[in-house]
Amino acid sequence: MLLHLPLVIRQHLSALRMLLVFTVITVITGIAYPLAVTGIAQALFAGQANGSLLKDHGRPVASTLLGQNFALPKTNPEDSEERLRPDPKWFQPRPSAADAGKGAGPYDPLHSSASNLGPNNPDLIKRVEGRRAFVAAFDGVAAEAVPMDALTASGSGLDPHISPAYAYEQAGRVSRTRHVPLGRVRALVARQVQGRDLGFLGQERVNVVELNHELTKLR
Image (cartoon, rainbow, N blue to C red):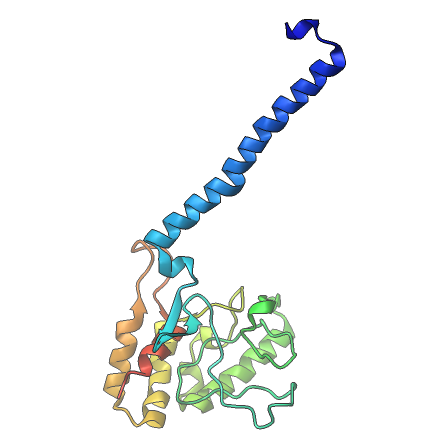
């Protein structure tokens, strides 16, 4: 019967059928599937799906996926050029190149980036040596005891992890400034060491955000 219809009408009917088919596909792939995945994520992995948030008395204070500054308050809050000073009471993260230079400081989530400087770049070498001297003085250790991850930024600039060596190196400073026995601080670090993924991928690491969150409970 369709073959006896005029060509223009047959073409329009074919186009209408294709429109209905693609509309159904769009509903399935663009609405139903995302809703199903969201529902499964909220039911089975609510914490991860909502940003892996850390809460203090029910109030979100950080995400375990993003590093952040643990710095002293600015001496002049209106000065956007004032550099942040690390707070000695907290474990410090590794350096971050995610700094747009507009007062937010390192670990600015709106400017995830690496320095893109090669290992032979004179600017990077100068920064590393400067950081080595600063960290050694800040933590009260010998310059040769400063781990490499205390001197170089991660690829994203937002990595919240440091090596266990860097965490243990900072334990003495945290112990002194908080007047907590060193053994308790080192035991806290030991509990926060995360093993290799699947037992063989990557390296052991410590999430500084989680470590400092647990540090608030140490008395």
